[in-house]
Length: 293
Image 1 (cartoon, rainbow, N blue to C red):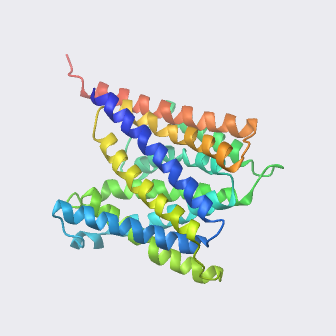
Image 2: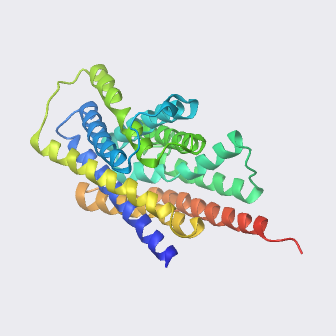
């Protein structure tokens, strides 16, 4: 029952993330991306401040000045800003497909920075995943879009955020981390707005779409937290890749996107390599826990 409950919450989280991306992409049609990031960061920060107070935790904790938290803030900025630009400038389905390589990059980072051992099979899975990403991006080929590189940068940022979160002080709750994660988007959006030189223009429908993105983002964050704390990680985590399915459906039916066969095959390789890595890692962990006879 725990595995079933955790899997359902993971699917809900991925669906909510996909809807959040869709709303941000839609809002970018009428408002500048810098303004969207500022509003998104402000709304998410206020909600997580309320949730932090509700838990009885301090909003500002001295641990926010620790190196992992500062690094997490930088990676959050890079990931959020790059992915927002990616889904704005390219197809939602393509950007979301590239983003699925984040767990593979996180695994590589864990090997480099935390000394985790990676066997030959998992190295091969990572290689297959990156081949899938190249099939989606197609550098040097006719279908190449330079803006798709923003999605690649986003995967690096989100992987760095996940690794920094792992190294974060345990005294900080998920709600506190949510406050800081959304807060850094406010100055980021402000700087991006100044750099772009776009007029500070608000649109009624755009504001509704950003408000919806905030609500779905908070829903996704909480559902993801519940999912990762319920059931076995090896069972729950593979459902993370349902985000790509939801993104493909929204891209097709909302934005009229038509992913070609190369994109679909590349997406399949990324997902299969990620699922294999998760399952293989779990098997190794189970073997290590088995008593020696």
